[in-house]
Image (cartoon, rainbow, N blue to C red; front, side):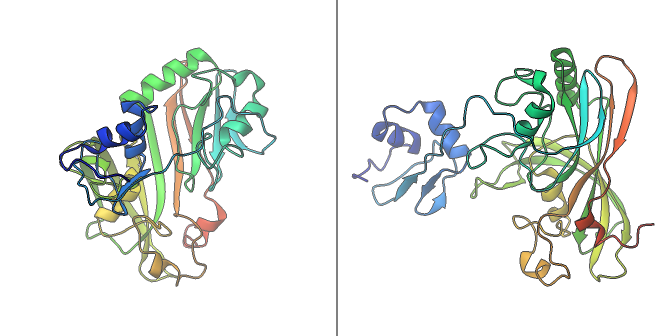
Length: 304
């Protein structure tokens, strides 16, 4: 790139070179990890750059405005006129995004529920909350606008919603149970990761307890995690902070050790096990349990 004013902010430099961009667009690219400075992910849009810095901006492909229905099987746990509760398969992306325009849960839902289109928005119809691509388990989808508004309020306030996960973790915490209450936000250096931070994050609360060790595989344990908040990568970050990362987690875990397991995990061993909520229109409490997938059962053979 041409010489840079050493006192110039990164976002102003990018704007000067790309006048068609808006300031918010540039900030979004930085937050999403699409901007690097000297090969490292940019920390923030307002960081200072010098004339010797090498700056690269990757432009992700546009996401189609309207997802298309696709005949993709989904594991339905419960369904009525207002909600659908399903057991999301590991590997399935929840909604279209760069690199995943098709084959998502939204594409499958639009085929399963033709009237879903537009509920809660065109791009993510019916989606109240999300799971990571490689996390399996229970999710609720709104099928009516009234249900959507009610569920969004419930999940945003974290009231009357209980989410319980099972995680296969490496190592064993010093205690048998505990509560983690801190701030989780973007990693200060690697913007594609999350981290426990002092400022700039959001409160994240996880209540955890060890269910048992795995007798057949030394050094692993099963941890039950009840989350009071739903931050990005929350459980994965919190388990890693205990020194017991989720098995198969290539971002926060110990992949070199995980590869030695038999079988070697193909994804993070994290499952949204139970979901308790109040029906958004009928006012009754409901609880759902998503069966533990076979790949996790390989590490949980002690469970009867």
